[in-house]
Image (cartoon, helix red, strand yellow):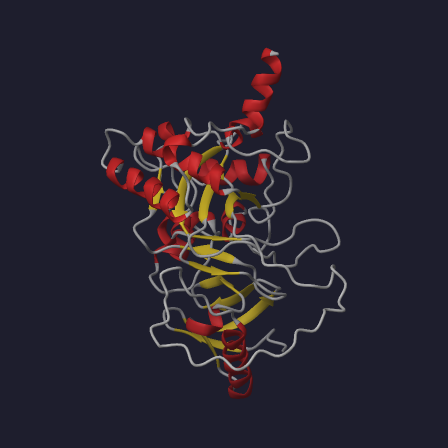
Amino acid sequence: MSLLGERVKHQVFGEGKIVSVTKNYVTVSFEIGEKVFVYPDAFEKFLTLVNQELSSKMEAYFKQREEQKPKQQGPEYKAEAKPEPKPEPKPKRKSTASPKKQKKARLRLNIAFKCNYCDGGKSEESIGFRGVCSDAMIDYNIETERHVWCSSAECPCKSYYDGKLTRAQLEDYLNQQGSGGFVCYESVMLRDWRAAAGIVQHGKNKGKPMRLMQVQPNSLAVLTTREPKTPESKRIIFAVFLVDDTYEGDNRDEGYVSAESEYRIELSMAEAKRLKFWNYYYNPNAPRLIKFGSGLHRYLSDLQAAQILRDIAAVKEGTKKEALAKKFFQHFCRTNRIEKDSLPEPDGALVRIRNKEQD
């Protein structure tokens, strides 16, 4: 449906006009200025179309999308009702489908996300990822790193960088509770404990939402980043959480994972520097190659995930989060039937490089 030029109502900013629509964002001009929202999600909670016909179509879209979402049940779910008597088995027919066409059960894996560094909300105990970046970080992400979203005309930080928004207006996107405003995923990552698959940035599928094909409840999500002016080999792990809500994604919406349980741990900058991502992960096709590439996530085995949790527990010794870190590690090992006392040492790309140099 065409929304350009349509009038909308917002619970905080009042009535406005849609001035731009892309695959993932919609820009609305209000009296106080232009605001950027996630599209189409903002129309589910924050924006209402004045045109009743279009509003009805939007409601129908969200209803259909909800019906199409896969129903997830956690591992604790057990059917209490007694099973009904099974019918007499029919003679089995030999499958005529070729092996390639037969569906295979997907292996549950854990996931590591590649995150642009965000120093919003940084403190001695927090690495950031809880607010809009500092001016210096915004300049660095746009001028030096040239991150795709940071440099996009649709990004509020780019508007601020170009002098179209004041710092107060930029902060307003996140500080207005329930506004539906959007700066970037990183700015709310440790506030909402949610990570998204992202959008394809290059190639023939550019602009298409990415899916998370092998992540399920009880998978471990690992958040990684690099400090400014550091090489890929210095990529650090700054937070982990146990997934309890996941959406694979489709042709319109990207996949995501999130958590609300107690199993969520972030690290300070000093702690994160002791947890190099490439100590644990390696590319099976190039075991000593340290390159994340344009992809925004990588899958991890249960052993790799357990090694990370074990080392986080060691890093957290003597802190307020020591008990939680140990409980998290033990819970993950118990759930995945891992012998925590015989867990092997990490065997990531950095480890393989060091071993090669010593040979």
